[in-house]
Image (cartoon, rainbow, N blue to C red; front, top):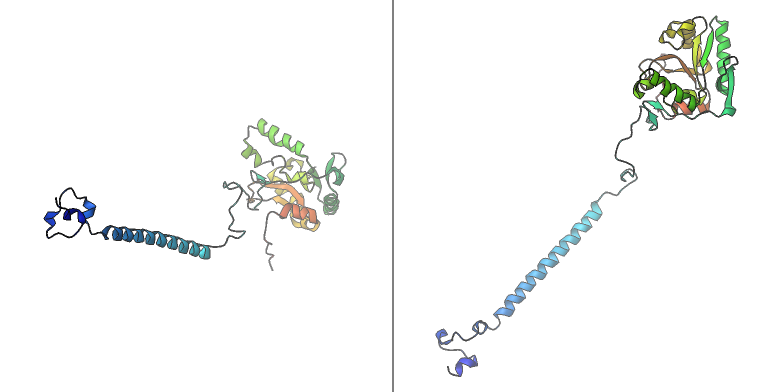
Length: 266
């Protein structure tokens, strides 16, 4: 092979190039840099475009994303819904609302021979109501007033066991401990002294005492707690009445219930 073959000078024919010449020498000297440069430009351009699109997307999300308010904040409580009554009170058991136990200092006796007690304000109005009823020939007799949580435990669990009742069945007749209106000192079970056989019976609503209560109890700030088809699902108790004549009693029985005012016929 002559020296001209190693000089890199152009030959008259490509056939003069031998197989021992490296392939790279056969290429145009600037071909490889151009291809590499083009590739790098494409890669850099692609990366820059990706970054630009990412920045634009992030900016748009930041601008358009709804701001979280107190209402939109995720709850920190369990996702399991808490059972409630129609009142919205979450502290309920089998349809019964929770009530505090009246302090001993607030309780007075309304029936000396039976030791039945109520809160002072309720006791005063109850005695006025009894007097007014007697003047109309009606004998209102208190059967049960304040009951402690301990007393309610006996009434709910022991009696329920004796009668072979499940807690749900028992709750239709008696409130679970901590959830009885009798704890408040504002509730009283009333009977008719003329027909004691109707005490704590639904046929109490056939007595003169019941009819008088229906017509006059509101004047003394008493109301029936569990009428027929009441929303709490408690059995009809025409003998069970509660006092709602002061701020404490009113809030205790109505604050959580969110009841609307009743329409009075014109």
